[in-house]
Image (cartoon, rainbow, N blue to C red; front, side, top):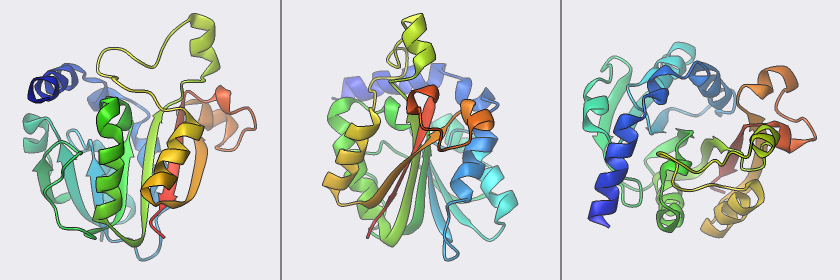
Length: 212
């Protein structure tokens, strides 16, 4: 397992799209729109170099944000005026206290987690959230019509798992989350909004779940 995790670090280190993706800002704005009025402490999972944290802090300057990433040099680049704290860690065991956060955001992250570690990761998210805390994550949609036509898969390169919306919803509920909702995300949502009835039109989707 250690060798596999080290290999994942190298795969993700080589993937630069998280530092260049033009949709990152819009994705984090989608997260912030769902924050509750009481949301203060936020864990930004897969934070990279902190582009998402900058977006959240611009909208809500009072947020207390912790950044988490498995790439140490990305953690080292975080702006300390944006991130109150940071941790270099994998997500199946996160060395932070239980019930520490009002919200956890994970943009285009869960597909980088090996299948056998997805459930432990979701359990850790549940543990770290306070009661009524919110989990918000986006991930590529395996049913995306464009990929079907082009015979492309979500899997490949640093994507080592894929998450069908109904299956991810069940997993979140099995962990103990309530009020699990799926909404469209990604570039198509700019044109279609988040609730277009043909879900396969979205290349990415948002899963929203509450610890309640």
